[in-house]
Image 1 (cartoon, rainbow, N blue to C red):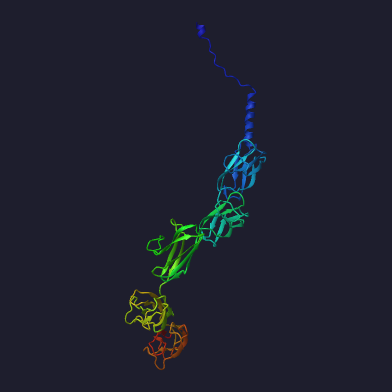
Image 2: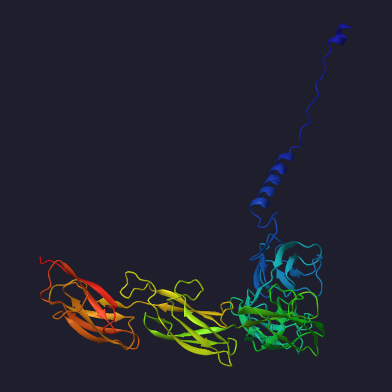
Amino acid sequence: MKKFFAAKIKKPALKKLPIFFLPEAIALLLVTTFLFCFLPGALAVSKLSLSSVSEPAGKKITVTGSGFEANQSGYLWFDANGNGTRDAAEPLEPVNSNDQGGFSLSLTIPSVAPGAYFWRLDLPAGGLVEGEAAFTVKRPDLSLSTASGPSGSTVNLEGRDFAPGLSGWVWFDLDRNGIRDAVEPSFKVTTNEAGDFSVSLPVPKVTAGSYPIRVDLPEGGFVEGGETFLVIPVLSLNPAGGPPGTLVSITCDSFKEGEGWVWFDQNKNGRREEAEPSMAITSVYGKIAGSLIVPNLTPGAYPIRIDLPEGGSVEATANFTVKGPALTISPRRGIPGLKISVSGSRFPANKAGLVWFDTNYNLVCEAGEPSKEVITNKYGGFVTALTIPNVYPGDYPVGIEPGNYPVRADIPKGNSLEATEVMEISVPILDLSLGVGTPGTIVLVTGLDFRPKTTGRIWFDTDGDGKRDAGEPTKKVKTDQEGKFKAFLTVPRKARVGASYLIYADLPVGEKTEAWSDFFIPEEE
């Protein structure tokens, strides 16, 4: 027993590796390192890149690939229907990879509808798709100079960001089918190097409504651009203006067959109302004809509208100018005491009334305001004369304040005020070439806004009494047709230094002095 328990228990022995294992492990490590570090393209990630991810049809982009199998042949295609499979109608481009598994191609964006697509790569050919890149075909910009107009007018088109240096067509798609037909107005256009173009397109003779203007550029395939143009009817008024009671003939074309209304929109709200003059009309071969009598309205522009077919929006509008009585003044600018001609038109015929200067702006003819009684002729016209008044007493030489003053007419007398015109009343002015000088100085005196073609005099008032006295330097002057004159005065030798004097103008002679200006003689240094 004792010997049994004294026996040794053996430990498990480690299994020894073969002597040849160590060189194989080292060899595998060296091969893996070589593959990662020295073989081009080994375990590299393949990549398909686009020089631009969004362009309109017809423009060129560059497609580059890297990390694909070296020295292989395949193809790149534009997956127009997005099914991941190359179909017969989809653009195809052969591809050959180089020794590093890369390639570069220049491609033209095909003519397809704007939207999101994929470029797909099968390299090597057959089997799975090895690469793809998302691409957006964007819509070029087309702008119209106007979005609406009548038949026979012209619309200018500006195209931007189309395919550069290519040709195509712009046309009115009258049947709205997206196809350029021989009978539809069209123009051939070619873009510049930036992809822009401009063209003028005549609006064809068609019934009123909305029509597409389309652009197919480059020619063929999908229509790249489009905008909508509204053809509106041509509404003609004869006459286009006149006083209340005028009979207006109304004609219009480009309508669809149907029935509707034409009316005088007195309150300009766009709706036909019972109190507004109106007429039922029918379109015959796209044309309508009617007439309306102008209601009793204040002067101004009022719309005549057509709703045909009845209901919905107004199809045509033209403005009629209601013309009331009018005054004409000649001249429209003058000084107090000047006579002006006042003529009237479009007043009631053979009626008596009053014309006056409303110097206090209160719309009433009062005592002291220049006025004339008149009688209109059988055409509602008259001619009379008024003298420009001295409006307000004050600091001005002729006792008026310059400004605009109304001339009014009340014909027939006692009714509401029928017409007003504005007269500008000015004051004569003396302008001196020098306002300061010594005795003996020669001064150029310029007169402005005096009575035209009038003789008078200017003088240097040495004694300050406001009157022309013997011995005071004086010059005779005469105004031209615009009320201007020029003359020279010499500052008298006896004038005192350090004193102010006045140079006066009296035109016409004998009336109140019309204007003056200051002149100062400084003390000698």
